[in-house]
Amino acid sequence: MTPFLLLFVALATASPLKRQTSGLDANGDGLISKDEVFGAMSLHEALVALDRDGDGFIYLPQIIELWGVGDKFYELNTDGDDHLTFREIENGMSLSDFYDQFDFNADGSLDAAEAYQLIYIYDVISNPSFNNPLDSNGDGRLSSLEVQSHMTYDEVLTALDTDGDQLLSATELNILLGSETTDFLDDQDENGDGFVSFGEAHGHRMNLDRLFDRLDQNDSNYLEDPEGAGFYIVWDRILQAGTGPITG
View 1 (cartoon, helix red, strand yellow):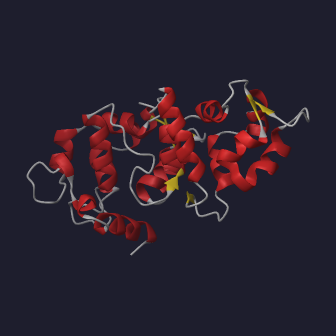
View 2: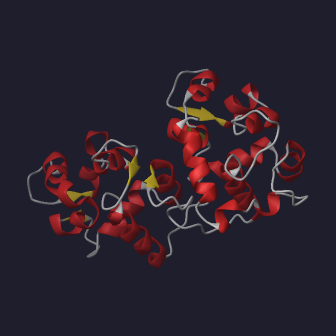
View 3: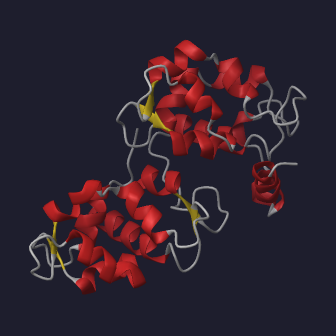
């Protein structure tokens, strides 16, 4: 059994809530069939639900988050750039193919462990204002997809800027970056004034994905306590400011 499948099994067995298959399970048998998925969504609707920042693209981390490996990204990426367009995906696979990617044991149906991501997609389609917590799958850690599905880099900068001067001090940065604050300040503070302006924060191709990688100190591709603690504070500030969540 692959590590990714083990993760899904762990999610499904962690609590009674995780074992539920939601309204997507139309006949209530505890399994998700292709017919149930076909009756609930189109491939395009699924892609829109996954496109939480609304830019019309699906990125490699999202494919890995869905299926554990990035093979499908490279197979569908006909122009060789850093993202998949909806057209590339829809030209390269059908909703049936999309479903099959979740059917890890190839038995023709999805149990709760296999269907977890499809259930999330269904929930977003059914309720576009679906306000899931930052840790969307409840596994106690944050993935890059979960972070980028809820906030943009500019929203993070604004949330950290407590005095609204568009200059981030070490104290403000420390809320999110912790032990990485000094290195981030050294790298991004181009004029040496001891602050990182919003403009400087975008220097050196810095973005939310790179910020996530900086915080992922053990290179696990997840932020575990205390690595991701600051993002919960940032997310709370975004919600209080009324700028989140992102909707596709």
